[in-house]
Image (cartoon, rainbow, N blue to C red; front, top):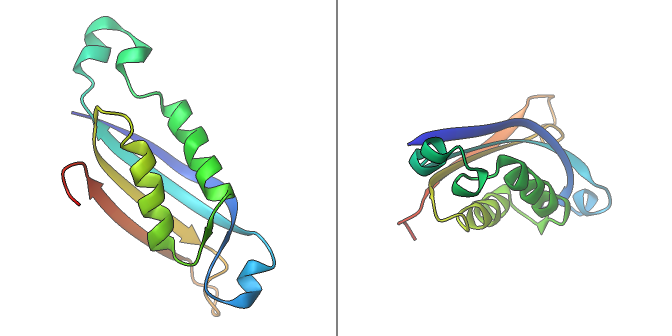
Length: 119
């Protein structure tokens, strides 16, 4: 099993429960990690037998940019669902930091791990 990590991905989104959060885009910082069976890709040196991390990164950016969720929980589930479109992916872990969420300057983040065979 192989793991790919896309970290420190800065994307602006409309997300939040407060009215002010819907009037402007705010920066989110994402880390996306996923496991997949890389045996065929390694044996054949074949991108098409792999999971194209560039395509995954592009999907994550597009998903976040079009976000209209209230909660980070919903956004992470949407991202994970899309990454599981790659049959070889067995686990996805997403961490989203929301720098503007704290009234006291703390960096608040939400993290969730998803497994292919779980509801």
